[in-house]
Length: 362
Ligand SMILES: Nc1ncnc2c1ncn2[C@@H]1O[C@H](COP(=O)(O)OP(=O)(O)OP(=O)(O)O)[C@@H](O)[C@H]1O
Image 1 (cartoon, rainbow, N blue to C red):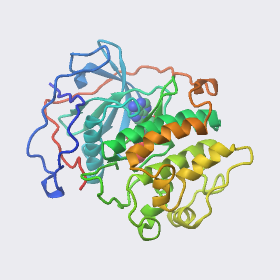
Image 2: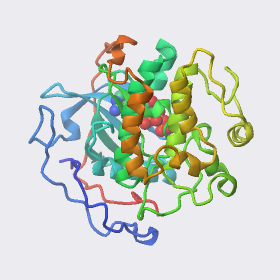
Image 3: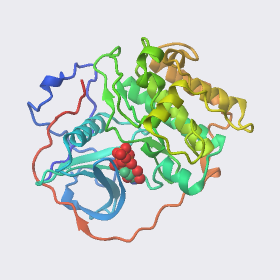
Image 4: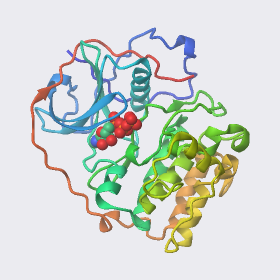
């Protein structure tokens, strides 16, 4: 029998374990299943699923498209192999813990977690049938401003949710933003995210994808004195939107594959990327708001209130910035659901419980 862990809301104001106490002291028992899909009230086990195809490979894991045999509901199953190194396993435990705590239409939903007898760990997630924003950029080309307005609104809503639950994503980029055929955008991949124990905790650790890191994460002394740790996600969002608009990484000429030092210099010391002349003033001003090098200016830009309030206000501001914010971005982009060839591969699971381990970074 496999154990399926459903999401549940914890009181996030409770202090989280210190690093030294991270080893499991108890097995996490599951609340009753409350899936919104057709399989509600029935816990899904790994043997209920058949593998349809590989969706992609990430850092140490593989994501499969799977079908629930009885209901034919399609899910995505992220599997991290038992022989993965300790960093990768720590990342999957962190991702599990965050997905277990989150419940937002702007964050990819988890439907359960399995551990196989051989130690492989799998997270069952909602399936996003249009892939990632990175895939769409490569297959459909650059995005219009109105499309970006819809994306910005959704990612900001997701960040507002995460930040208000004291979670910093730390790796916002096009390939971590999943999309479905309704152009709903959801934040995914919490492998390097951090749950803050206190609102004022510092967070200058060097993790995430280098190209999307904010200046204060490379050089906290210059750009981040007293910085608000949540501001880095806003920088990454600005850079992501600009990349989707320009079609290449904004700090470098198209086609250039930089090394770490080149990237770091471009981000910390380079000029803010210039937008094409056709870009509207509104779009420019929004990008400028996100790409303030000095993190405190970035955070305090706008109404200068606490970060959560600021994001809520940002929704209002965005509506002014992008007048067609509420129009369907499907007008701009047609997303085709993919057709797949089934290939039966079963994912076996054990009855071992997954315990909390390394889920919370100190
Ligand atoms: N819920 C999902 N629905 C549909 N496709 C998904 C889903 N989750 C992941 N994928 C696909 O699987 C790929 C691999 O995802 P994964 O999160 O393992 O790694 P990544 O974010 O691409 O890379 P890394 O972990 O190295 O940052 C993604 O790029 C995406 O194409």
